[in-house]
Length: 200
Image (tube, rainbow, N blue to C red; front, side):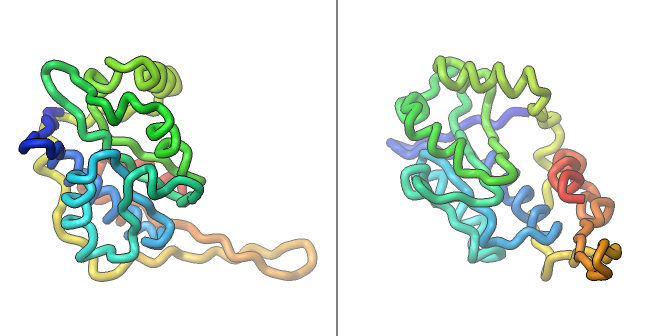
């Protein structure tokens, strides 16, 4: 879908990506994932300010940093905003720094979600190889053009609680297994159906 970057002087932001990241975080939190287990990243500080403005009021415990600040640390879920999306397919210097991008891409323990323009980012060789990989694996979700109107900007007052199934074990002890009820979490949000389904 159209998600053009916006430039003001030396500041580069992408409002559409930021809105979808807000929706993604809301759904993850509704699914029972702690805010402290989620990290949000971008190589553009102006984008981080925009994300902080959107996320902090509802999710104050989520860390929102540059890749450099996350170096040496991990999160269960990492969401990355690549920002750049323009008709010239100009990727910019920051995303051509593969060391920095590699740090960002390797901070997730369980789930890595990347928002970006494939046509733009594949103009640099390392990111082009990355795009080829995710396309070959079927890990790409192309957001439909009309989805920008769908994300809800409001957050739930509290996360939906996961149900617990307690099957017996060999020694008579019990083991707690949490199950997320995806149908409630994903109502009116088909673009992110797989996020919660993988936690069932």
